[in-house]
Image (cartoon, rainbow, N blue to C red):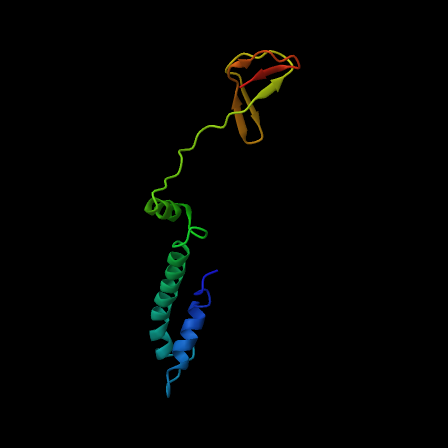
Length: 122
């Protein structure tokens, strides 16, 4: 949580209106209408400032900024690769057979020989 999270549009606008003396600052007044756009810009600025602060640390940075932080230290992410696993079947299957379980898709590879308790494939 950013230290700027309390800097909301409403809070900023209330603070600005509280500093105006001897003029009406209720909603719809000239002063309120004049200050509201500036208060909005300040609120957006505080949001960006909080986001930039969070992205300056590895434990709170989003992925894009984490890569930039790592690059400063000579580290780069490994390229994603396909996962490898071993499947056990009751019968022989052709190499290249496709299977899906929930959101995972599998393609059978080379058979593993020398096992007696089933048919195993990479």
